[in-house]
Image (cartoon, rainbow, N blue to C red; front, side, top):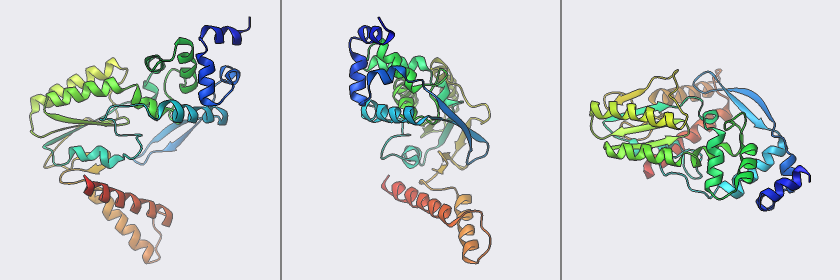
Length: 288
């Protein structure tokens, strides 16, 4: 008996069902060897981010997995990243006007979301062992989620439902509010209670470690009070959601440079994109 027939027999026809949902021949799914093209792109705040882009055939299948298997599944409400209709503004709004804002960044978030957890999630939503293993192989790279795969953002939210639920419960118990935008964790307190803040940070580290995550050692833990500029996913939240003053001044300077015919640090198209961001922040911030 061939490997293909043995796997189909062992999978109780679930591989065939997966192939039907993805509109891809089962043999093609089983024979596909996931491959990626890796490259680096600059980060807005300095440094570089490594992207692992799947080859076209794999990307096409991953897009179908996302659209047909994952898109309608529920993640925790505290997870605001990678969700249709939500933005960095929605992540920032719950923390407006708080006494203390605590920010934490996770180190290597996507690669640290391990394949074993992805496999367990596929088992949890009803796929059997063989099909869950196949789905995991199609959606992971070297034991973790690849940053650049169409399935990684949704899976990073879905597999972390329990993590978000635990951190949200911890925050509520301490009188705080919790949101997560990808690898950015934010807690905010109505009252400035140093003991509660220290306990929150200590317990959060412990909980994160249980799921294979740790803090980004390159970025300090940020604990900002009312007299300081409080930022959440790059937006100021002291009184209302807004771009930082330095960013707004820089945009006005760029516009002035362009109007007077001098060389500017942005192209007209880039400036238009920044103004679109500023308008989005203003409109969504007003709705909140």
